[in-house]
Structure formats: C-alpha cells, structure tokens
Image 1 (cartoon, rainbow over the protein chains, first blue to last red):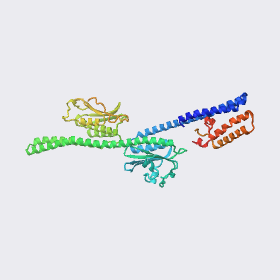
Image 2: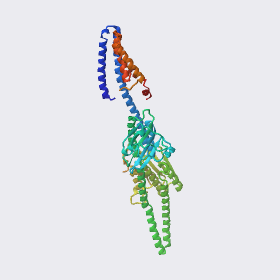
Image 3: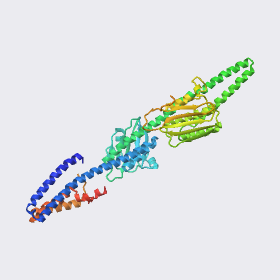
Image 4: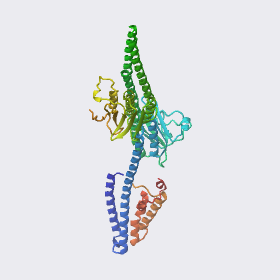
Length: 458
Length: 71
C-alpha cells in the first residue's frame, strides 16, 4: 500500500460510508422519532465510523511498521558494514562479510566465493559449517549448478526449494540438506568478482523480497570492503618494492663510496711500498683499517635493520622496539623508546617511520658521540610526530651543504617523510645534541590521498 | 489491504451469521425496529467475514488467524 493509493482509498471509503449512513437513515426513517430508533441509528453510525477509521489506521500502522522494519534493517546493515570495513586482511574481511550476512538475515548457513580474473576460485569462505564438515564435502562449488546464476551470470536468485530449480544438480555427499537459498552477486571493480549466498532461513516464511534487497545492499558494502582489502595488499607489495629501491640507492651512496675510497687507498699503499716508503704506507693502512671498521659497522646495522623488518615482529611499533633493543646492545648507547597508544599510520608510512628512526640512530652512532638517545612517537593533532633526540656533540646545520660530507643521510630521511605526505626537520647546534622531528599524517579515511603536510622550514 | 485477523472458522461463522441475520431481516417476517436493525447490522458480520478483517480485533491486536499470529 502506497500513500497515493491510500489517499484515493480514503476518499472512496468516506463516500461509501456516507452512502451506508444514508441507507441506514432510510431504513430507520419510520423509527427515528423514538428513542430506540435513534439509538439504533447512532449505533449504526458509530460502527460504520469504527470500520472506516479502523481500516485506515490499520493501513497507516502497516506503513509505519514497514518504515520501522526498514530502519532496523538499515541500522543492522550499517553496523555490519562498519564491522566489515574495520578489517583489512582479505580472508578476515570475507569471513566477517559472510558471518554478518547470516546474522543480518537470520540464516543457518552462508558462504562467499571470490573468483579471480581467470575464473579460478580465489577464496571460498563459509559459516554454519565446521572445518571437518567442509573437508568431508570436498572442493568448493565452481558454479556449474544453481550457484552459477549469480556467480557467472551476475543474477540474484531467491528460492524456497532449491532442488526444484532447473539448474539444480544436487549436493555432493556429506553436504547438509538445504532448501531455501538466497544468492546475490558481488560486483567489484577489481580483477575479481564473487557471490554471497545464504541458505536455510530461520524465518517462518523463508527469505523474503525485503531480505533480498537487504542482501543486495550488504553485498555492495561488502564489495567496497573487499576492494579496500585488495588495494591494501597491493599497497603493501608496492611499499616493499619501493623499499628495495631505497636499499639499492643507499648501497650505492654509502657502501660503494667507502669501497671506492678503500680501493684508492690500497693503490696508494701499493705505490708507497714500491717506492720503499713504509711509514707513509703504514699511515694509509691505518686509514684503511678505520674505513673497514666503519663499513663493517654499517653492514651490521644494515643487516639488523633489514632483519627487523615490518611484519616479522608484529606491528611497526613492536618492530621498532625490537630494533632499538638490539641497537642498544650492539652500540652500548643508552636508548629509550616511547610510543603513545593512539598512533595509527598507513602501511607505507609505517615502513618509512622504521627507516627514518634507523637512519637517525645510525647518525647517532657514527657522528654524535652520544651517551643517550630518546625515541618518541606520539599523536599531535592530525599528525604522528616522531622524534629522535640525542645528547651528543651536535653540529651546525647552516654549515651543512649538499657537497659537504658527512651529510648524515638527512636528505634521504626527508625524502622518506615527504614520500608519504609528511615532513622532516632537524634542530641542532654545536655541543647541544641533535633533535630529528618527522611529522606524518595519521591514517584517515577522510583524508585525501597524497595530502601533504606544510613544512614550516620551507 | 489490511492483514487478515480472522481464522477460517471465525470467517465461516461470520458469513453464516451475517447471511442468516439478513435473511431474517428481509424475509423473516420480523417487523418494526428489530427487523430494520437486522437489515442494517446483518451486513457487518457478512462484510468482515468476507474480507477476513475485523476493526475491533485490529484495535486490540487480537487475531484468530493462527498463521498470522505465528508470524
């Protein structure tokens, strides 16, 4: 019943009521002079009004009930969508999608299958069936039967008796019996697609048309969550590739420079020895020894940095904590690490934070002659602030040109911060230690991609 | 249309009772105010029995329809 139809029915209903009253008046005309006659007439009018008003209130109650039900469904849909969007790992997202869909529509069984671009099954996740039961059932469905309708043809399907469908090919052995089925396609923009299906509704009338619409809306929300998860995984692999490029760059700029220096010194020593200048050769060999120790320390630090990679020790905070502990043991410099709990960064930014802290600590070891260093990570408004402060000798930043060595890897650290939309600055003076501050944007869905922070130094 | 709130026996009773009241009112030889009342109020059980919905039941959320009550 729509409001427009109800309006016309109200008009017709009152006309009918008036006609009925007129008929009653004519019928009771000879008796209206008596009290009993008037009572009967009034009773007829009252009952007629009760029928007419009752009918329209009933219609309004139905409309109100439908709106209330839709509100409840939308609220459940919103809660389920929020829960699904809160996760980034694909397999966990799929499991939550199917669990929430089952709960939302009161179904006993649920499943989601995702096909890759080559029509191979990328993932198949179920709920309501134990792991042992799934193993006994065998391989997941490939869409040869009824499930092919949503999976391969992109059509939704709602059945009260699955076996009666012309495409039904029956169940494999050990499959639990299923009658009612509701299946909708999941349309993603990514290189894959899938379907979400529920079986055995616990509601008395089976799956309704409203259930179908709800599942279609939920599948659309689930498709976005699946795409986000897929993009997140791609982002991770791109971050790894970018990090490899950085390592190659640093090997070229760092170790290759020192090895070239070693080569030059070795040639000089050879020449001095040919000329019998043993004292000069010994001085150069001493310099060679210092260079070898330096490159050895660099290599050890590099290996430590690579070993303590993201993911291996849990979150990036745990990774940094492990790195700082090992760095402290390796270099005998007091290092403290503090992080506030509300810190949240995008995966590429997490990796850059780890590398910036590693680079800053390498500078402390090489140049600062510090006794203690303090690393802090905290949230400050819309940014995550990373500080590395040492009590070493410091330096004059104004005297630090691009052509002057050592450059302390500041440009590399700055590039790392800027690559994820952040900024980096160094506060130092001779004899006053050094403070490296990096500010990176917090991970936020509302923040536009590539939004950069303003650098107050620029 | 309104949701039915009468079971099959309730509807059957109403249709039979309404029909009998109207027959008595029109052809039962009952004269006067009583006959006129039967001719008017006889339509009520017949009409509500035919459509399966009663406004009094609806107001008090009653139902004699087992299926509707279960849902």
